[in-house]
Amino acid sequence: MEFAKEDEIIFEKFFQLKEKRQFKRALKVLDFLESKYKNSSVIYGLYGSIFFELEDFKNSAINFKEVITLKPKSELA
Image (cartoon, rainbow, N blue to C red; front, side):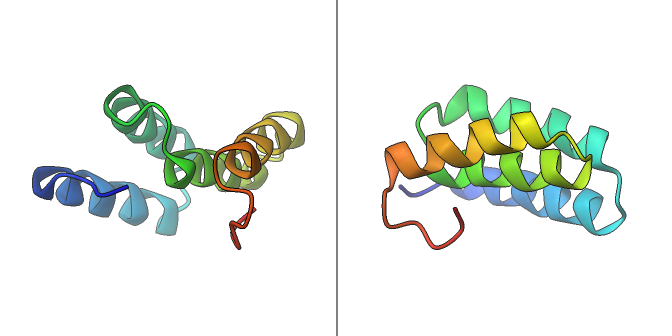
């Protein structure tokens, strides 16, 4: 799946927040992106990694499971 050029800026914002360990703010950015890309294994993988950092292992596992459902050979999951 390809993402729109204008969304690349939003992804960059997400990665900046993640790098700064501002995980709750990063989740809000993902919520916006997920509303546009409902079945993106990339988005679910990013959710899984953020929930893992927040030590919310249940939600992390749910999102990584969704990655596997959407893209069984995903290296991220």
